[in-house]
Image (cartoon, rainbow over all chains, first blue to last red; front, side):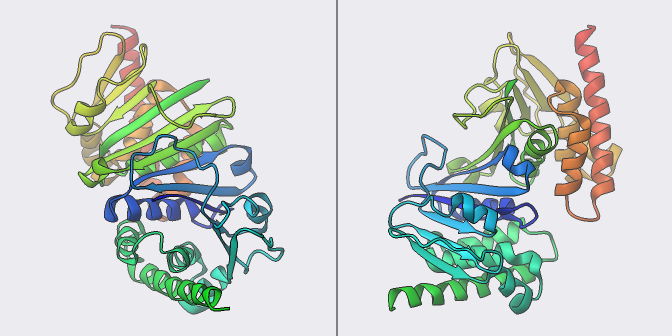
Length: 186
Length: 186
């Protein structure tokens, strides 16, 4: 296994925390070798946010995402910048609450879910959209085990919000699995 | 400017958050290009924790710390593993609350401060030892501006703890500056 994952959106959506949770799930609880990276530059100062995770069976030599297998997109700006950059056969998960112009890709699978809307209405708090996104990511890709993800979420979210975040994760997971099933049986 | 910084200790000391705060201070508020990395592998599963930050004037091509300019060490295990790995002329900042056997280095400057003890007694909460460490790091090295660090701390620590963390940062900063002055005038 060697998978590159990019999480992209705007500042304040909690994507850096999401990257850390995904990395801990894979590295500490699922036992993979993992590198997790944030870059800050002109982009970050313009409000964009990006976290990247590499998950591998073996030691990772070059810790840079070059051609992601999985891309999460949570803003139109992120979509315009990263929407076309995915490995052939890869998966792009788009939060269509925030993205109206969605790329159509020939070689990759684009899955849309109203992630922020799900956080707001089904979970009851927009602030957990990042954890709904992690649930959807696991539901669609199976890249880490739900069990590892639940442990990582519990250890990283602010004390007192564990239950809310677990609900967010599980609703996202369910919606992600449904979306995948639809793609498999069109 | 091209500086590599390694923050090392054990899980639960908040070093990943410290790495993110340092990276945001340098990247978002001081305007450098910054890459911040966490690695998870056998080490992390054994309780060790490590965050790395590269701060540069220009775009960073290879996002991997090879020979750090600055190393923070907050546990004996981290000291045994990383205490010798520093660039000639570099700085090793050791929390001697947790480290008893401290390396003596020929080509680098070793600064010891009882970081965890300062958090416990001078600030009043051991949990902010990571932010005391950031203050000390800035006081000793001047690697980012105190102003940028205060902004990054405010934006990243849990809501309601801003004041406590600002106190931790400023006490650490003061103690770091004192320690540097002592080194400069022996």
